Image 1 (cartoon, rainbow, N blue to C red):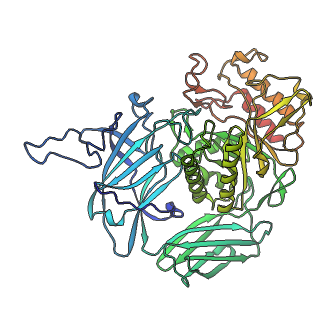
Image 2: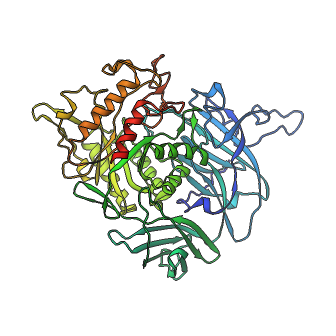
Image 3: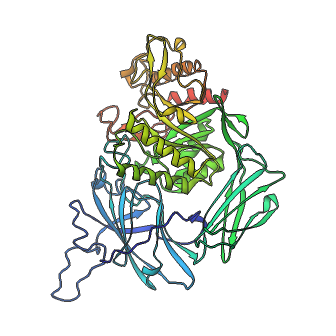
Length: 578
């Protein structure tokens, strides 16, 4: 086996390119002992004659749909954590003057990709895309593609060994073979100039670093057509001052068709423009104070106990957030698929998007840093043209300490260097009631560097009420916007009564807890938003109560069957009144 592969920075807007979809039915072989490479499962080996023996073959193998997790496709694989080899044949042709890019929107969680027997890509990270230039490995006619996928939990991974959501394995998002000209538009970044409501900034990168190449930007809806020239790095920069620019706003979305052309390459997509900033304790969108009426959800269709992967799945999740009365969503705890992000933008929902730097992380490891850096680069690289994204979150529920503080400080600096047009945040669970001060306080050596502070606080569930909710006061980073990024409790849909008993698992207790928390939030002077945990009940191996959980986290305001619990009505009323 030859080790020849070229990984590329992400090609902008892959769904707007000429492409061959490699979705569909793939053959699969389980490899729990990791013998597949030695058995040459990256080839479509077949006996060459009567005396030839091939132990492993894809003939008659398990069949799995791509995109999709393997857990829900076969009962034997529901709990499987290990290696599975995927394989398929496809027809393609080489084209003179064109590059062929193999694009994976997401594989959970580490993989090796082989084309016609050669390894062409290696990637770790379930929730961000990757790609490889396979032009020189592609055959005219039949091609054989094999992917070794490993979803084992590991202490050095991101997320780390223990995480409170289902460990779906497989090729869980789209696979595309992109076709682009030899010289093509590799990347672009359009955004509104901070604080200037009528100026657009543009940065376009070509695949070849060469000065003096023309790049044309066209926005017909704004009567813009302007040609920029590249510098020695192949980057063209410009700004356009425009009359009549209509800005994207929460629940009032507006997107423009933007076309970028250079040489023989042209790319078009819908892009919106908005400004987001903080002013003291307020979050401003286009200069207007905006309270985040938010909800979190996982990339999961709980009704079918599977990973969400399609435009129809995005409609289910985003539509439920809209129905609740939200103007924002938190994509917990990882970058979710592009269908969800783009639909949220079309619906006018602000997006809080984060990397899965979630508990139990080894902040002393340079390897961990490299994985976190890659996650952040790939998340921002994929989504920075999505104006709906107002917040990049770099961590959730990490413990303060010198190594952690230094790690997150370094990560924050990287994020701001990649995109200074968004607000940066993290969610923390270290705000505590201090009896001696009679208020909630938080000590954290890193958090003060962020634009917005997220607080996860489960009063009445993981923490008892020290006094009536109406009497509780907060003094947590009082000079910054504070968002309650998680609160709530578990309840089984259809269980009623015992509104004052946590162990009742009742809708009544959950609704009463929500009301008490909302009363307490009214005493937070710098409150800038609320995001209950969570939209739907979701699968989790942590939740083992045989009667009340059955491996579901039951904190949803909607059940795993889509039923509205009483807490849904509490939040819907609260959001409609704000």
